[in-house]
Amino acid sequence: MNRTTILLPFLLLYGVGSSLTAQSDRTAIRAEDLREHISYLASDKLKGRESGKEGGHAAANYFAEQWLRLGLEPLSVLPDDRKQAIAKDYLLPFNVRRLECLNTAGLLAGTDPSLADQILVIGGHHDHAGVGGPGAMGSPGEIHNGADDNASGSSGVAELAEWFVAHPIRRPILFMTFSAEERGLLGSKAFVEDGPIPTENMYAMINCDMIGRSVNDYLYVGGLGTSEEFHPLLDDILKESGMDVEMGDAGEAPSDNTSFYHGGVPSLFFFTHIHEDYHMPGDDADKIQYDAEVKILELVRDCALALDARDASLNFVSAPGMAMPADFNQKMMEHFMAISERKRNRGKLGVSVEVEAEAAGLRISKVRSSSAAQAGGLQVDDTLLSIANTVLKSKDDLRRALGGKVKGDVIQVSYLRQGKEHATEVTLK
Ligand SMILES: [Zn+2]
Image 1: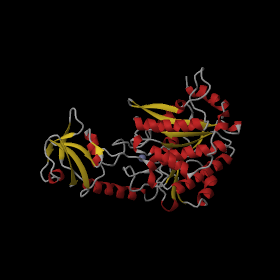
Image 2: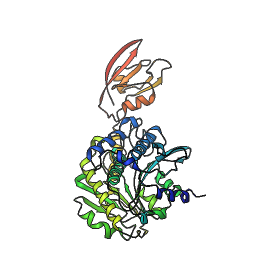
Image 3: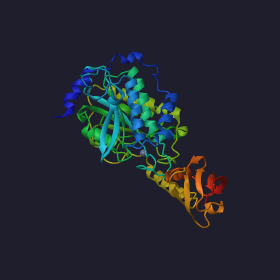
Image 4: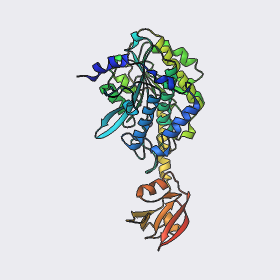
């Protein structure tokens, strides 16, 4: 039996409950709220939010908590003995080989029952490249925080949810965050192909992926050719937004809207372009342009409102090709060249180490000749205790301590020699 046939009538009956009355008054799209979401999601604590790993799960749980807090309805049917949803009801698990990954979804009922089977999906992926995970382009051991990619978009979805809860539209809106995007759009694909909502009931999809680093108010909007009605309904809004909007018609993009497009859903892609920190450890929360992101989210909101003003469903149109900024390939090429330059420049210590059985620290088993370690006076059988304030207990710790360091960087090394602690400075080569 197909779950959707059971679930959909249930969803339509079950609107936003009385839990709304207890909500905070955070009903605007605000830079400080975005900063709060992104600072948590892109903190080292979440270790780059790799899908299927602890950090990825933590990000999913964070969004599940948001949907609960906002009083959205979960897509899962609550057990008989329970009337109130709890956070985990908003998690949609799927498997990538043997790895369990978690999408999240929360539904906001619409105000017009006759449009209840035309759900607008607004989503963005919450996973990222972890520590050397899928798509990671930094050095081994470095955490890829993914503030722009895509804490920015997924946090934006949460801010939009907050706004729409206070200002519901005629159609239901499903707010989603996807996992395993970085493994190949797998979370959105799983939802479109095996999720509880048939694609016929999806009015349109709006995907926010990397919307936090807008240079000179640049914004790319792709997928405008996937419905006959997108241009007529949205062109003026995009042109008058005050943003420098580049429009694209193609249905595919290197992001989750592609999965919905393949499912026959008219789908849009909002994106502020790649930059020097794309899939690099430097994609941090302090580099997000929060005020620009607010403007972009207000534009996404205005597009959603314009789409909802239409009475009929949208006509899907096949729009072959990849929706991308005109200079995307050139910028990507420059990015790859900068990364290989960074790799050539990587600062090396020049030791082999073994993990000490009992004591904390790493025993040096080999010092390469003319290496930085040799110049700094390190010897075989010294035990490395810390480098640049990173305590060394595993080879991963050592990789992390050296991650992102370049030739010529001076690092503080503390080590044990014959039971006595020493400190030295080493210039990496
Ligand atoms: Zn990415």
